[in-house]
Length: 318
Ligand SMILES: *Cc1c(COP(=O)(O)O)cnc(C)c1O
Image (spheres, rainbow, N blue to C red):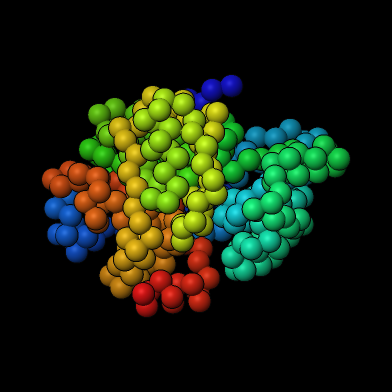
């Protein structure tokens, strides 16, 4: 099953009234610094604090009544878990989340708070996908993966669809990249609504599997990367996301942890917005000149804002 822009439109209708239509922010300081006109799509203000609510909401809303009754299961280092838990709670669907035992405390607490059952695992020793599949089969739960699923990709695409509806045509869209659900969905929306727009993905320097995959023309797998971008510690792109990324994306750039921390400081100081490290990937690429944005109208997805206050303080102080 492949995904197309029509699926993004359908997702937008399904999640209307459940997901927030988040604001598009601008900053004269950021524009002056980059020589570009930047439009920030503020997904830290999305429900559950990240764009992942869009895909989760769409995937759950698309289930038939029998599957809804039995419930859904997901594996996630954080934001997808919260998104599934909250989207399930809002739609009356039971949720089970398989989470790394060392996931950020705030994310674990939030997920449990939305009513999900949490099953912990060791991210360096256990195969979370195998564990999740086994639980799904034993309990008749429907597995909703964090990025490699047509309904998830379509849901994630609604953020850039809304952005373009508001800004009109853009020269470039920069998107944070983990497993590629957000980038693939964004690419479908941008290609349909602004055909000449260049689409870029930005991933952590320590985990540039996406960049390697584009260069090699096939999905490259890497060991679990170490980065403060805890929402993008994926080891490979997906079967569904890679072909769309390969077809539509102009390039994939990388940024360092220090560059992410500098971007976080900018958003807190200048725009009064808490953006988590992963959520700063795309913006950091623009701020640091890693992607050539000068003289262009550029859309930037700030993908999420879930960061422990203690970790936030550390990044701001560094
Ligand atoms: C999951 C996540 C990403 C990466 O999304 P993919 O669809 O896996 O590429 C980026 N930013 C935040 C805040 C996330 O939670």
